[in-house]
Image 1 (cartoon, one colour):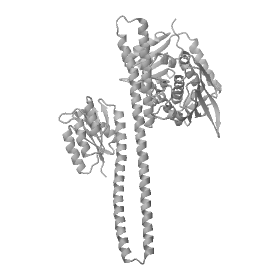
Image 2 (cartoon, helix red, strand yellow):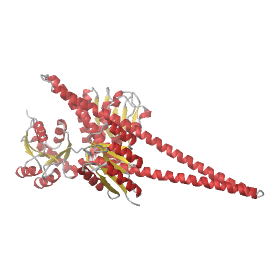
Image 3 (cartoon, one colour):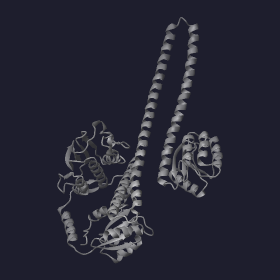
Image 4 (cartoon, helix red, strand yellow):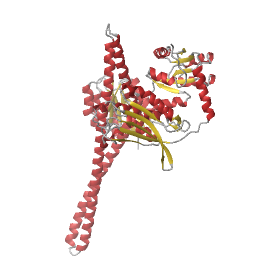
Length: 590
């Protein structure tokens, strides 16, 4: 069987070459990649391919081309090859053009130029999978029609034979009766098969329609969740430009911009995480985790927010410090706790919130059962299962439930199950809720000697009054300046480097550097290359990665490379200081 053909059309040769290279690298082993610089040229080539019985699963076409635009091309192509899935590239498509492509050109998806290569390749792979499934179903339906026609002809032929035998062999009624009974059974069997197939197709259609409905609702909600904070950012940024603006109003506007930015970043992070989960790209990274410290960190982080709402916020830990050190995925555990506590605080306006865990025995094994209990609005029993579904939000009476992308609980459920646990909620509407999740208990024994060494090291840092020496490494000048401004209010000496090579030179002459804030993507020598060389010079220095790549896999990659911790841009002042204080004693200047 010949390979299928993926056809790319664009009047810019550079774009064609880029598309061809990306597609060859991704799917070139199984598909032929053909190109054309105009719609007319492409239609002629496609006619030839179809005559030679080549399958054309995907066509990628630019919208703005001379002579024949992308939407006109897609309408003509759709008549020739209706099963082909069409992707439109555009930098200036009109609403009319996109609408024509959807209604008359079989448009599968469109991308704005410049496109994201990973998103395009992922879409192409999904489209190929969809095409193959549709093509297979098309062939099966065709075979079913042919079989049905054949069976119908056979039935007619058999009926004629029976009529002739009936005229000739009236006396042999017993044999004819048996044959009629067999025929009836066969017909009933066929009817049952057709009925079963119809039910299967109906069920599949209903599932597909429900999936489309949920995803459409999700996309509509995502549009709202992105545009709302963007409105706050852009609107109040404009207001800041007003001449003679009073300082109190200026501070208020800046606070609105900060909160809107945090909300927008939260939405983006949730979408990135759920995309990785949907694509099956999230991996486990088990390390030693002190769950008492983790809960204390979460408690401290959210205590101010709880106090502002007048809530009583408490934290309960049951294991000793030695028993609380376990093997687990620290990043995912933190994400689960943050999502659940944040969700709880959002729906609790009065009363209390309690965070904690217990050690429980399940059959022959022990598990850690975490809980977050609140006195909030509660969740109706018939909606409790739905709150963990992807693309679904529980229809809670409090309209504030509609704020947010609705992905936090879904992400938490996926992470809990990846780590071998389960998650559930117990609640009554109007009486609060308790979220539970379990993780396997994998204790790690820690010697008292190691604890003593760590304690002494911490005490040494606290007692020392010398300036803490910090090296900031980033090729972006504004990023270096931002971090310097934050840290200049502390008793620190700040060193600056533009790239990994400069950082290496500074480390060779400053062996007493306490901490390095290292960007990962830099010219000459990047962060991953620089840390290898720096560790050869000073193996004890704390190095924290800072990067705009916000995937969980990026964090795991940095930790595996030897970085002590990870900061995802944009970096907030409070988060920066919180992470740094885990490793050094930051003393504020008086």
